[in-house]
Every structure is written in structure tokens, then in C-alpha cells.
Length: 267
Image 1 (cartoon, one colour):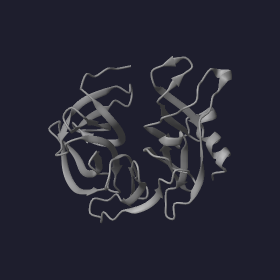
Image 2: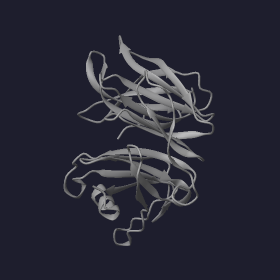
Image 3: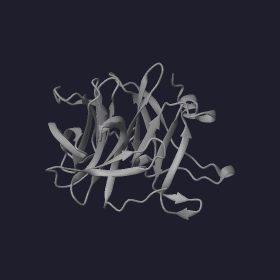
Image 4: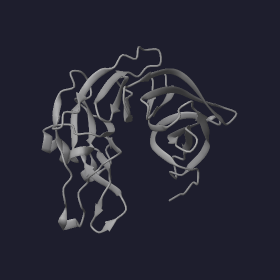
């Protein structure tokens, strides 16, 4: 659809209703590994095409993962991390078409993180420390950065590395979806304390359609939006690190949320 030669980008997240150039746009922010910066794009709502609207410099030395958060007042934040465990939170704004990021707080985990996700509805931020645990804290800029353990790597339910994290906003409750890369599974827990375990699943072979399963998943994303038909309860998308049918480069797999909800008896 589009190719932008901007350099080595790693993780990316999106939010709606960012004010840029005097109008509301959707915005995507990625970690730029060549510059240790935040690469920002506006998203055209009619065509889906991106426009490079600039970068935000950071003091990180090995920028890695990122997630975004929108607070109750509509302010949008980008939260990148570094392989050394640091997380920085930036409030994004744009004046005279120039993107600006104000760092509002910093926190860290002890070892390498990557995946993170914010639940805008409850103002909870979930961060993955790859070999240790998923942690939660308040996402708001003026809140304390006390970390609360959600679920630990235990070699059974969660096998390192912890990779992608995503939030499913359900009608009854919200769920946190996790990529447990070490055993090619996708655990689900409640996205509110006490973070009740709801089960885990794997994506297997669909020989009839010639679709291989999913494994070595880094990033994933989920939506509860009604996308019609089999996707009426939403969709989970995961990166598949090994393409088997036929052998090819990594790709993405799509699963109806209704299949997951039925398998794990979710509300």
C-alpha cells in the first residue's frame, strides 16, 4: 500500500484524535532504532496512508518497545522503553506542524523489557519484562510509578520471552492478551486486579485453508470493534515468526475473537 524509507523502526502503536496542523488526525508512533527517537506519522482516515510528521528525540541508547496512552482529557502519550529497562513517558503535541514531546515521567524494570500496552478506559499501563513478569502501574502522568506484578514467568503458563501485550475491551470485562513466546501460546488474564487467569491457547494448522499455525510471536494486537460477519466480536492479529505453508518470510495471522471466547469460556 505504501513504503516510507524512514529507517529501522521496531514497535508501533496508534491513537485517534491527535491535533496536528489544526485538525484531528489519527497518529502512529514507532521506535526509531537508527536515531533512538520516536518516529511519528499521521494517518489519513479515508485512505489509511501515512504522512511522516517528524521525530521526537530521546536520551535512550538502545530504544526498543513502545505503547501509547490517551488520558481522560484527551492528551496523548508515547511510552518507549530501552533494553536497559528504562521507560520514558512523553506527552505529544504539535504546534506549527512541528511534533513535540514533553517527558513527564520515567520508571524502569530490572532487566530487558519490550511489549507494553495501556488500557485508556481504566488508566492501567501493563509492561512486559521479557524474562521475568508482566507488571502494571497507573498510566497517568502525575501518578506514582509503583509496579504491581500481574503474572510471572513460571516455565509453564508463561515461558520467556514475554513479548506482545494487548487489551481486549469487552462488554463485561477487559482482558490482557500476552505473547508467551517460549511455548508459542497466548495467555489471557483479567486486565484488572487480581488479574485472574482465564487460560491460554495456541494457533494450530488449518490444513483445509492451507494456513500454518503461529509461533515465535513478537507483536500482537486485538480489537473488540464489530468488524462484521465472523469478526463481529473483534479480531486478534499476531506476528508469526515461522512461515511454513509454504516456507516464506514471517507474516501475520488473524483469529476471530469469538473463537477465543468460546474456547476459554470468556464473557
